[in-house]
Image 1 (cartoon, one colour):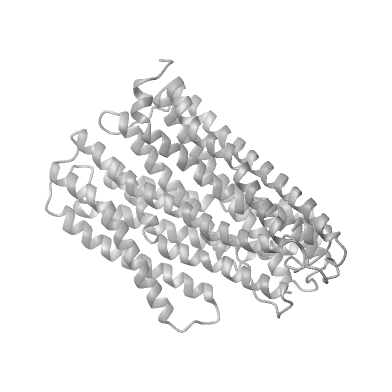
Image 2 (cartoon, one colour):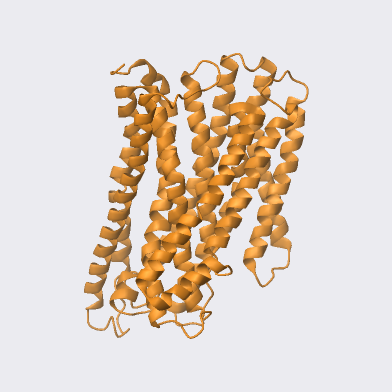
Length: 490
């Protein structure tokens, strides 16, 4: 973007641009491989959290042996049933005649997957829990685990719809943002920030309500099931997310080969919203499992304790520091690639389209920069719970995990949705839907600047924050016993 559109006023996917193939590959790596691994991590984490919490409840005497067996099996069967529902939904949608709007067809796959998961979850809950002795925390008896999972499913669908509203060109927020581009870059950035911030409330509200009700209905076990419910149809979510880079690459290839223009998409933003929401559920489940690993009886983290508060404050600050590292790394690498691309463009014949630039060099640079500059942030996520726990104890890490999660979730939603809105506002103008303005106009150039800012937000920081909080929670769970027994400052 910096090299083609900002420095040389070339089309984004012009074949003369040395970075163009790296950009195509980046769509696949980020929106399919990266997002898929993020969702899969959440899927596995929530399944494991359900089993861990069931084990903790059994050890504390809250679950009978028969109920324990059922509680251990239900997360695994629910996860398997959800994947089966995904296969059935995708098969049905694939056999249907595709309409003019592929997004609607893809959304219908979500609803069908959710329906199958609901039915299979209900049958499994009845079979496993109807004939065993259940604790009083199961308010609705055998139906409590299923209702908890339903709350997660509803939250997942709702978060996808909310994300689509704030990022799609079919709705007012992105259309208004595109209109702001006529006033210049500052208006685009400011309005995009406001859209991103406004979009945080409803997804977080759905998450909070689902966690509260599922906890009331089924205790800490219900929280894990709500998390798993949201992720139970992850196969469909990944399939929907894959539509984004496929459509983007088709449009890019058409432009590179000077073919008729292909329409872009908005579904990648929806996938990122779902990934962020599922990460919130997964992390909360892992935190509950972690606190339960050292608590006697019901897992309790005392927020009146100065140790917990200190950990919480540090956790929130670490999220901001992590975001800054990723942003710096991305823009530094982007500048290096733009500078290297400039050198290739200066070779006689490249800018005239007579000589092909060295695409492979730019792909190699992008790959090496990504691997090298993600090393420190990755290590940071792994060592913080260990060092903090060994120095200050298990409660400090509990506070740190909660503080990081509270700050990271709205931050990630802000990053994903503001970035998605910037991207689609640019596409809105490119599709000539803003009267009097099209590609190459001043409004389009202002929107391009917004999109360049948004790329770092939605494609780097927003999704990486998911991994950051989940990684810390996973390490804390894995080493909880060590931290509990070897704290230096007591």
